[in-house]
Amino acid sequence: MLDHSTSGCCNSVVVAALSLFSCVMMAIMAAPALAAGLREERLTLVTSNGRHDIEIEIAETPEQKAKGLMFRTQLVPNRGMLFPYGSPQEITMWMRNTYIPLDMVFIRADGTVHRIEARTEPLSEKIIPSRGQVVAVLELAGGVAEKLGLKAGDKVLHKTFGTAP
Image (cartoon, rainbow, N blue to C red; front, side, top):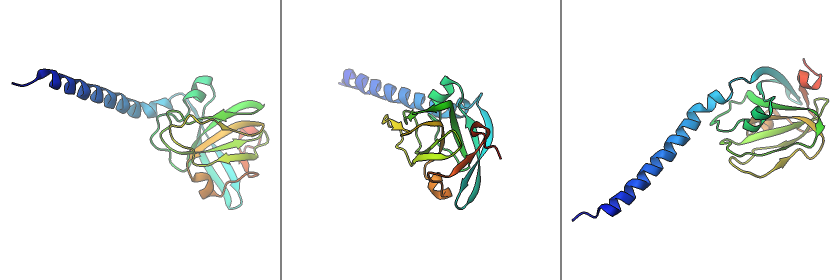
């Protein structure tokens, strides 16, 4: 005789797993839509090995800043997201619901790179501080800052800093 209580338990586990998988897939498929409504512009990073143009999305509203690059599964090397804050302040970030490692570039009011937190840990809730007064954070794919030779003291050219090229 077949014990249906065991198969019912297994079926519940399978249904729960399929439901979780479905939710994750919907979040991943919706990721490009998360960018809807974000203004897109270009900024230039000036490093010791040259100028590098980056296409950016600008997270301006509190909702856009809260969402940031969450749920994205990729970010190409010449793209990023800029989080402008207007006045100099200590800024903190985290990687909640962010599936890819990022380089967080903390930028002073004059467009000078203050510091870089390289290759942040995906899905971490560890607080990442600016460790000083900055007006914006630029998020790039993990490892891009190093590849471009970007370091503290380099310049970011964009109208946010009054340094538009």
